[in-house]
Length: 152
Image (cartoon, rainbow, N blue to C red):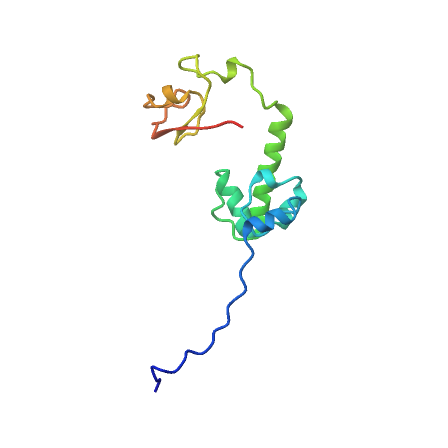
């Protein structure tokens, strides 16, 4: 029987896990380990090898790449490699600054394109025009929502 007056046995306190922000401050040049991963963190194809399965899946999910049916890590790595190479090809072929007319809303031709139409994902309107769309002017798919985006 346990007596109510008896002191509780001492418990060991587990060492605190390092804070994610502390890890970033130690060496910002280190490959991504133990924190959220993004395609922007990758500097070359070899960086993909160091990523965990969780980080690979996160990169794919953030970039709207379906990874269902991938049972092995190498399958996820292959999809991230393809995504990384596609991004590098886009950056190499096209400068980040678009021409002025190409960046204008295709409806009013007055405001910059700053809206993505969901579910299709087309970016062809300003937020004001996008919120008035019932269907996408490009593919005629029903517009569920128009989301304001920020270009950096």
